[in-house]
Image (tube, rainbow, N blue to C red; front, side, top):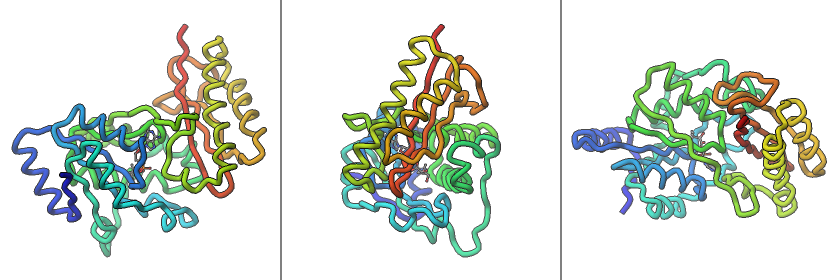
Length: 284
Ligand code: PAJ
């Protein structure tokens, strides 16, 4: 049976006992509305840890004032059942007033890698993510923490934070989980109309096309970016926010594909903003 812990002090006490037994703690932070992507992280954690803790916390500090904090899907009953099936031992579900009590005011701000991609249109987003993840790490003290490539920039930011601040945790990146037709799984897919969902397939299709270009020997970053931008732009329901290519995991500007590069896109379908990406690798 999965154990639900809501209080920070109880969570600390549980972890203290686990550490006394020399058990390895795997941690999967989430905002709930769980789908196969989250559950894959949990199973991955389960396979390499003695104890798996998953957190479900819709973190207010990572949402902008005009974003979907209030509307964000909350599916607690289904989530708890899914966690149980995925082999989670403890679900940590703190309350907003406990995580951000009256008078709270300390932020973790990761520089350089937060200014581009999603950082441009979501100012403050990564500061909120880095801050809440630090707080969760301090409470759960995991040996390994699992994050999805779906949010590749988030992984880059957290890896840099862990390195820069000498945090004693290993960040593990898990590949993107997709629906059968290619759409990357996301809690926000539930916002899409049927037409928008069909249109959104242009994202995974154009990323796969870019991969094909690289396999055929194309190395020119501007060329690949223009092709992807053109394909997505041709979809009438798609509103492109960015199509960008950077070195991975450094997120430096590159002119040619050499080593690993991240091709990342953010596109709006109506009011729903979707992100997707692929790591392209030139094998000489
Ligand atoms: P959330 O969007 O709930 O995602 C939780 C984790 O699931 C993240 O690491 C995310 O990358 C991963 N994930 C989501 N969709 C995925 C998919 N299709 N395939 C693989 N992994 C996927 O990301 C957050 O929450 C928050 O920013 C959080 C880290 C919890 C901090 O509040």
